[in-house]
Picture 1 (cartoon, rainbow, N blue to C red):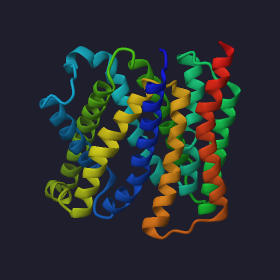
Picture 2: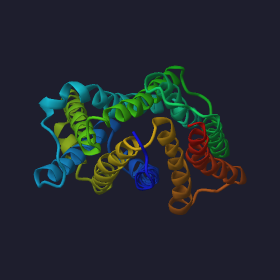
Picture 3: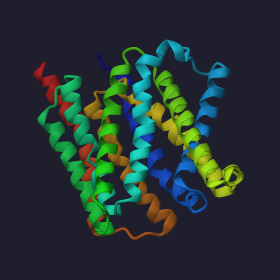
Length: 308
């Protein structure tokens, strides 16, 4: 899979775009969860995502092969992301401290790098390894700036570790699937898996609690509806399409480091929108992340080109 200047630039813009979208999503999620629970909200989010991408398909904006023709090859990818990832992440975050969650989830690129070497046989140049570790150090500084906390249970970190592994496996599966399927096809079947799973879970939960009316009515609460609209259209359909596009053009170990930019966006959004403090240690963290993202792509690419 060769790279040219145009495809590389498209991949970089896709990586930056997805990071900005994901980085802003926490603002909407926080406001929505004041009025509903995580399971209900996931069903709202992926309902909007499924409707959005189905609308694009019906009106010919995107082309997707029938599900029965790709079911076997994309089923596991859809199961891993978004289904397993969001279940493990939501459960893990609820049972962990914020610092534990931030640190464990930031290890995803490390796992991607290891799995990419094993399953995709990607060459991992030393500059790329050092760059990813540099970005990880930036995450740790930002986490430390927010304040380390304690009091979580051992189950929380275990579940979060599972979510990082599923996120890493998604990068590998999407990269591998890109040789047979378009980014839109991969995204479409991910949204289908997310909608069918989380809608079923939310419906069953509402019936068990005896509150099906509340389940339906909470979707119409302005904060919940607006959050579902943003996360369903941009964070789910838009950002995941951009990630799948990026993974079709860049090695998984290079593409995954862009996820660290989401932390920078989230930090800046918290400062601008929520009036949170910006500490000196966090400034150094942002610098390390930006240098790590640049280095993982620019430096390692030059090294690999020199080896040819």
